[in-house]
Length: 95
Image (tube, helix red, strand yellow):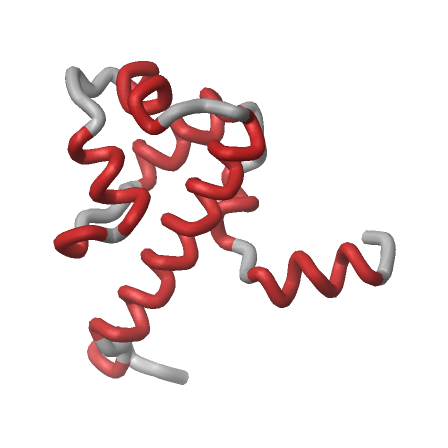
């Protein structure tokens, strides 16, 4: 079993990038702009949201952000954590 100290920053950043990519993908599917989602979340501008969605300057979404985004986009929060390989597998196998 890995200890927390054994998890590298790179491993964590890979997960943040996956989440950001999935948030963006779901937002685009719904036809929403970054500004619309950011303002719906309670931000006064889209700057943080835009940076987090692209993992710019290592800005990332926290759990509260992901809960709000899932409500705005009307998708289960678990969609933000699934890799493309898993999605492809389920699509090919009808799950």
